[in-house]
Length: 367
Image (tube, rainbow, N blue to C red):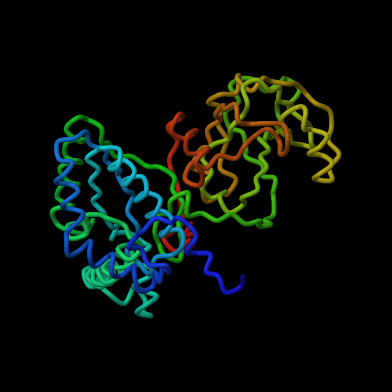
């Protein structure tokens, strides 16, 4: 029985497929056949005039070898396009590359081992262009090797003059429709690369920084200072986790619905949220005197303080209102520096506060 060839007793279909895959040898043959027969153009011609399915592919950066994420991205999109073609759609695929921005510049500078400040802008751009085009060709070869079908001979490349010209035309059309305006906004910044970053590029880590209480002399009280407090120097008490932003202070933000207390502290009066008086006293190791009166936050809008630093006391800190002020920590009086954060920035826009940011491109403060 052991000598019998039972395979011959099976009714198997006859096929030209080899018994073994031998993919390392066979796949290059498939790719060569596709290229020689121009399969992509042939399939486009077969479905010309059919309903279109267009996948707008977000381009990879041409800044190095592809990785598993890049490969997965391209393969999955290729599957979708081929499926849509099999369903009868005219499904073109025009690949592209992003050849601008810091990922290119950063990789290029690392490869050259040079300091960007030693080159003029034009030389650096040409170096980055050559670097990007090199990796573009390498990535194109790898994508073809993955079996991705597309118009590889005519991709879109963001550094091509014709592509940049189209961008300018679109920008001009947007400007003519009134969609473009000039203004300021907060951005994430990399002091090493000296450039703005997208939120997706930010990696967060825990950092311990000192928190401080700061007294801002109150110079305009909207007539709300209680009679018992008159004659004493009054201060708004703020608390901040970012002491380095104090030079850029231009405001103090209160919650309009909170009740604020005028608290006696020796020969001065401190203004803070009534519900936080005990916590502040304990945290600061102080024994406050009596509460001389209270005022609702909404009644202090547009009051004014002096900047706590004498060299900046010509600059007033406007009292603003916002619902984001809470009673979890601090004093209920929020230090506001629109040049240092997105929440403060929005408050600054609302109250037309100056946007002061004394931080240079390398992250150094110059007051």
